[in-house]
Image (cartoon, rainbow, N blue to C red):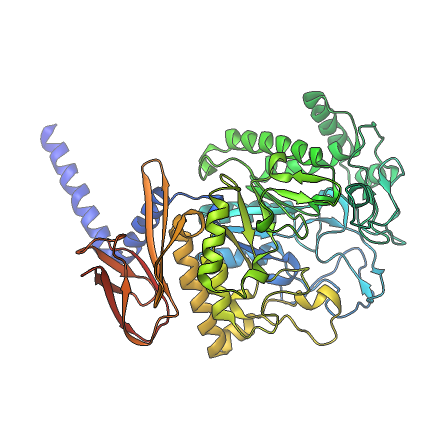
Length: 561
C-alpha cells in the first residue's frame, strides 16, 4: 500500500511539473491574480469607477434594433443607438476595464423606458439614457434581458469588478401619447422647481412634463391601472402582486409611492447581486426616503450574499453614491438649500459626486491634492467623494475640447477620493458633436474606431491605463494620506493603512526629460528597491533619492517585489 501511494505521489509530482512546463505564462497569471485578490483590499473611498451610458458604449449586434415602435425621427443623438448589456459584457470579457484599472462600472438605468418620444424644444427624444422610467420592474429590451444583466454582473465579479446601477426614485418618465400620466395619488405635475428653498427644490417638478413622485407621502396608494394591465398582458400580474404583499408584510411600511419603487429597485440587488447604487437627483427628494432606500438595499445585499456565498467579493457593505447637483467637497458634509442644510451622508450615502474638481483642476497639483486629502481625513472622515471632470449632463466640463487629456488623467486619477472615468475620457472622445443640442453632445457613441486607428488616441489610452492600474493596485492613491516630498521636481507620497495592511507609494509629476532625481528621503530608506510602473524600471534609493533616465514626465513608484 505504501509503495502504491509513493508511486501515485511521484506521478502527481511529475504531472504537476509537466503542467508547469506546459503553461508557465498562464500559471504565472493565475498566481498574480490570486495574489492581487488576496493582498489588495478594495475600498470604495479610492475606487476607480467607469461611468457609461448603456446605449452608447458597445453594440453586441451590427445594427441597432428598436422596440415598442420607437421609430420616429429624432434630433441628433437623441434616439437609441444600439449599445446594450451584452456589448458591455463583451468588453469586460476582453479585459478592457481590467487593463484600464477599473474596479467598478456604473451603468445608467436599465429599467423599461417610456415607449413614446417627447419634444421639449430640442427635437424628438426617446429615453435612450435610461432616466425616463415607465416600469421599474422590467428591463428595457433595447438594453437587453434579465439574463443579460445576470451574466454581466457575474462576469464583472469574476474579474473583481463591482457593478453600480443608476437608480431614479423622484420622477417617472415624461407623458406622451403612449405613456399616460401616473395617478395624482402618485405624482405631482407642478409647480416647477425654483431651487431657492428646501420646499421648492423637493416638492416640485424638475422640468416641465416630468411628473414628480410624491416621495414625502406616507399615504397608502393603489397601483396604477395601466401598470396592472401591463403586467397582466405580460403574464406576471400574480407574481408581482404576491411579491409586493410579502414585501409590505415583512417591512410594515405603508403602501406609499416611495416604498413601491424602493421594493422594485432593491429587487435588482436581491436577484443579481448589484454592489451599489448611484442615486439620481438626490436633493429633489426628502432625505428620509434615502435612509429607507439604503436600509432595504442593505437587506437585499445581505440576502443575496447568503444565497450566493461563492460569488461574494468581500465584506464591504452595500454602497450608495448620490448625485446632489452642485454639491462640492469644499462644503464638507452639508448641502445648503438656502433655508435649510442637509447632511446626506447621514442618510445612507457613503459618497457624493463632487462638482468641485472640474474647477479645482485649474489649480496646481499640490493645491488640489493637499485640499482633498485634508478634507477627506477631517470633515469627511470615513466618507468620500466621487470626483469627475466630464459627465453626461454637465455642459461645462473641464477640457471640453479635449486639449489636455494627459493632464486630465493625472488630476482625475491622482486626486484623493474615488474617481469617475466617463466613457471616452480615456480615448478623448469628442464632447462637441455638430448638430447636437444640450447634453446630447456629451453622449456620442464610444469612439472605438479612433482607438483602433489613431496613434495619438492609443497613446492617450495607454497613459490612462498606466495611471488607472496604479490607482487600482494602490488604495493609498485614492484613500490614503497625501504628503509633498519635494517641490521641484514635484514629488509626493501617499500612505494607506487598515489593520495589518499598509500601502506606500511615491509619485513624481512634471518631471524633466532625460535623467532625473526624485527625492524620497524620510519615506523610503536608502537601499529600498522601488519599481516605476510607468517606465517599467527598477531603481534603488540612494542618498534619499532615486534616479530615473527616460523621456517621461511622470513616475509611479511602488515597492519592488
